[in-house]
Image 1: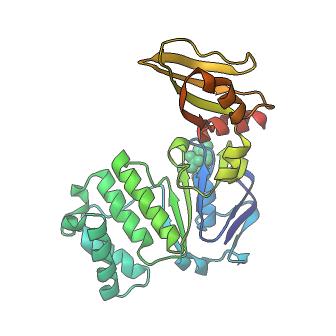
Image 2: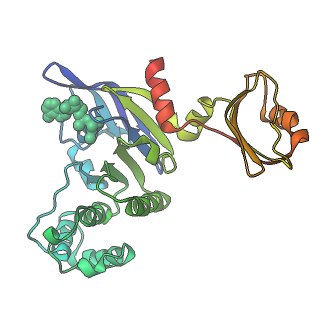
Length: 301
Ligand code: ADP
Ligand code: MG
């Protein structure tokens, strides 16, 4: 649905993006992950034609992106902005009509969303009376209201408490399931892996890793397992010396440990080694977090 191809952007002689390519498939959630200053917002602004790239191009639905494509894109910019003095409902109606909805249709959809997100009591309040998180919810609604086929959210979770961040994730998943394609950025890598289908990790203006989240996590797996064993007495669990045990401890009759296996061994070998010593109550693979993967990808580069 959208490709950025070899996009480069300089501010003076500083490279904000250096030969960046991403490929966003239709109907999926694509996460642009990376620390502050990596270049995420610059790429998003180029996609939204607020900035022009110096080199490379953006392809939308098979053609080089043009201004008329903007009507198919819902964009939540990093720098939020609602008019502080205006009432919430009035403002949302106004913004919805700018996106081409009739007043009646806009009001119908807005009333549904406001009820759905439990913000309907704010309709007649002034924007300035709302907390940052509340304003974010309103702006999120105005971004998605006209059902654009591509949604681009720049740091959508910043300013949200964990409860509302979870709520927003659910809404993003629902929009995807209803057919939208979603691109979003975040500097908080650990918080998003559960909602992304695909990701690009960006560091210092370059893509250091991209692809399907499940495949990436599998390819960075460490053959490490979390183990729990119920033992009748507090004896120590013994293992072959090539199994590296960390955090091993026995507490209230339960032995827990993280075990790193050599490449030649599997979880079944671990199970065989310990099953005669107690009742195995848990054996779970430890997959690296997106943060761990990012650090490793940067150091491999
Ligand atoms: P991110 O969104 O990943 O935090 P940005 O894309 O906002 O990063 O910024 C990438 C880099 O480009 C930063 O070092 C930033 O200071 C710089 N930059 C962004 N916009 C401008 C601009 N208009 N003028 C000069 N430098 C900029
Ligand atoms: Mg940014």
